[in-house]
Length: 220
Image 1 (tube, rainbow, N blue to C red):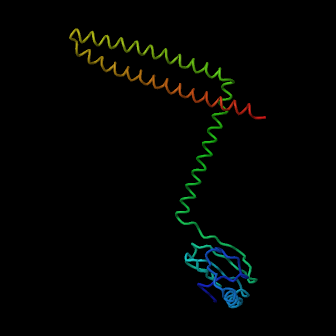
Image 2: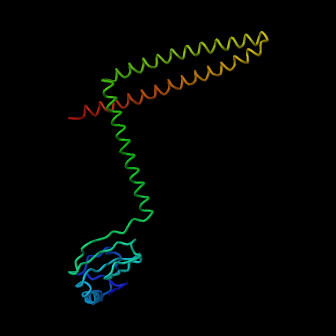
Image 3: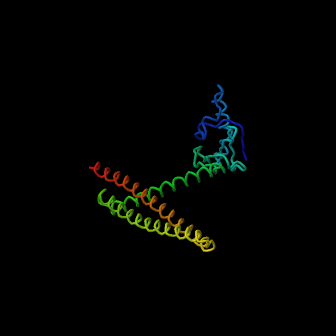
């Protein structure tokens, strides 16, 4: 086996893996390269040689596969002195993590775009114009407002009954009624929150519909 380490790379044998790291700027570099090539010619003639650059920028060449340096890129050179194969080093843990994070971001973006496209399709099919959407919104909110009025009226009745019981000294029944009042109040607050969510959704849909219709008008 012929092995050389910490030597510049023969230019005739292969293109550099990392040109900026070889450090072959010495004025005697061409002569040294020729000497190294001459020393390696028997190995090249017999089979393959392997070339790699370590983390310090040093070039290594050997007629046997390198061991313990799989974290570095390497080249396989055939008997004619030509690069037959370039073997990339496996990614580090940090590189794998970065690639996984980037892939996750890409998938998330694609899924978000797909959901938006489906929502746009449904919106355009559901409403032919802004007027239709506004009419649907007003009908839906009017229905909820009616429910709110009923809940509010019932809540006032319960409160009035509670106050009457307290005035008559029937505190036990008044306290029992208090539980119903709290539950009724919670239903009223939830219905108000529902109305707000529906109003906000229709507001977003109206803005989106205007955007989509404007795009259609701009499309030749």
